[in-house]
Length: 83
Image 1 (tube, helix red, strand yellow):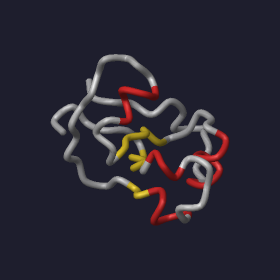
Image 2 (tube, rainbow, N blue to C red):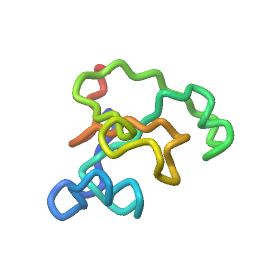
Image 3 (cartoon, helix red, strand yellow):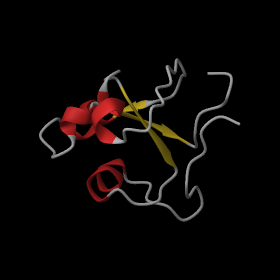
């Protein structure tokens, strides 16, 4: 099934607003930090994804926002299972 975006039709398409407000959007959030899942969600799941088309959030909106340490990569529309 892959990873699906929460709200492709009416969600927040502005990357900066999406990151700062954490609202339903057409993006699926991932990170370069392979250990972030241990402290953030404690879900026990860690997926390694090698997919094209991700948006490096810190390179796009700058690295001074409050979530910059998450080193997020946002994928518009989701991530197909094959990745």
